[in-house]
Amino acid sequence: MSDYLTLLSFGPAGWGDEIARGVLVTVSLGLATLPIGLILGFLLALGINSKEPTIQTAAKIFTTIFRGLPELLTLFIVYYGGQILINLLLQKLLGSPVEVNSFVAGMIALAFVFSSYASEVFLSAFKGINQGQYEGANALGLSRFKTMRFVVMPQLIKLALPGLSNLWLIMLKETSLVSVIGLADTMRNTGLAARNTKEAFLFFAIACLVYLALTFLSSVGLERIEKRVRRGEARS
Image 1 (tube, helix red, strand yellow):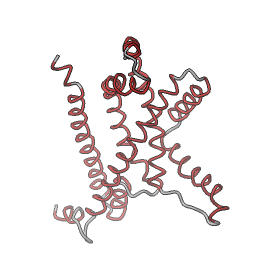
Image 2 (cartoon, helix red, strand yellow):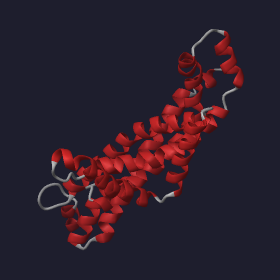
Image 3 (cartoon, one colour):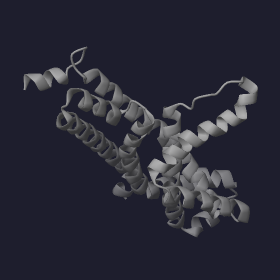
């Protein structure tokens, strides 16, 4: 037992520092990806609902591609393909190759996947808003922007929140995929500890506990947010 505590301790004798830094990277990656995925998913939903055929087709192609590709393959395409594209564009300007940051690549790849599914959640939420809401806002003389901000968005958030909460939990677990491109997240650091100490069960069990703890804390937080959003319904 004392040997296990030593391995998990902080300092040169243990792997506690590396695991803690990995957890910080995992949480940071998830939180950095979330707003990008939400905004892109919302724009994709607006694009699919657009009356402009070109915009509608482009949005549908985007969502079809990134819902159809495995997440790991998307990560490889963004990381390696993005590196090739950036080098082609900047080689003449800088004269030297540029390496794509693995954190940024992971964030972009996860945002593409998250947004493609989030767009479907937003589309379902849009369908849940009665057409009379738009007509009433128009009768009051509200502009399209004000209608979206004051009439549609409060209802949209309420309707989309359960689906988006599930997508967040899925994305939080999918952050473990970035370990394959060298990002020192929870999975990569626990894997390094397992290989170096030959205590695979111990460190992978720690990884399990970390992801379960993050999922539990997220679930509690999301439940409180949902209750706060729906507090008006409870009063009525």
